[in-house]
Image (cartoon, rainbow, N blue to C red):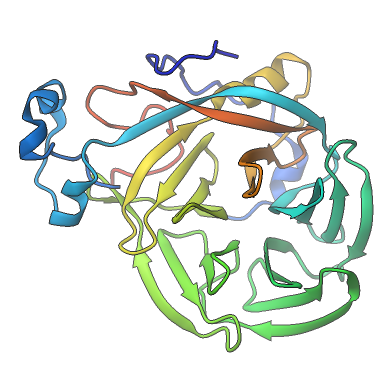
Length: 318
C-alpha cells in the first residue's frame, strides 16, 4: 500500500482481468460536474483551468472535485464463498452481510475480528440476495430481478416479513436513520419510505454532467451516499439531494494485491460498512477472502478531473 501522507499524486491503472470465473455466469447485466473554483479561490482555481466547466450554483459551492486513495489499517478474514451484495456495521465488532447467487444467497451476522458467522439465514433457492441495511432493529434486504424484499429482526433472522418496492430492480440499500436509499443498477438513486416502501424521491447520479450507471452496494456516511460502481474498483460519494458525485475513491490496489497473492477466483469490489461511533471504514468484494479496514488519503487525481481511465467499466461517456 502507498505510504501515509496528507496528499499524493495518484498513479494507478485498472489491472487486466484474470481468467473468467465460472460464477460470473450468475452475474447480472449490465459529481459533481468538474467544478469551477469560487471567486474567492481564483488563485487556486488556476491549476484546474483545463477542466473547468459551467456549474449549477450549488455544485460551484463544493469547489473542485476530490479524489482519494487509501492506507490500509487492518485486514480481516472474510468468507471466500460469500458473494457479498450488502454489508453494514452492526456494532460491538459485528457485521451484517447479504450474499447472492441462486441457491447460495443468505443473510448473516459476522464476527469482525475472526470472520466467524455468528448467525445465518439461508434464502430460498430462487432468491438472489442483494442490498442490506439496518434501521432500528429491522434489517431490510432487496433481491435481484424482483421487486420483492424482506425485513428481518436483527436478533432473530427467523422473524421476517416480505415487502414489494417500485424500484426497477433491487441492488443496493442504505439508510440515514430516517429513510432508505436504494439503487437498481442504473444511475438512479431512490429515497424510500421505510414504512410504505413507496418512492419519496429519485435523483439521477451524475459526474461532469454525465450519468454514472451501475450503482450497486450503498452506504450512508456523514451526509453522503457512497456507492460501489459495479465492475470497477471505484466508489462514488454522492450528494443525495441532487445526485452529484462530490468525490471518488480508488481502491484498485486491493484487488490487484489479492490477484498477486494467487486469489484468481475473486469477483468485483462490493461492500462498504461504516462504524460511525469509531469512524472505521470497511470494504470487501464478492468472493474475497479478506475484508479491509482502510483510511482515506487524498490524492491529486487526473488533471482533467476525468475518471474514465481509472474506472473503465463504468460507461460515463455515452
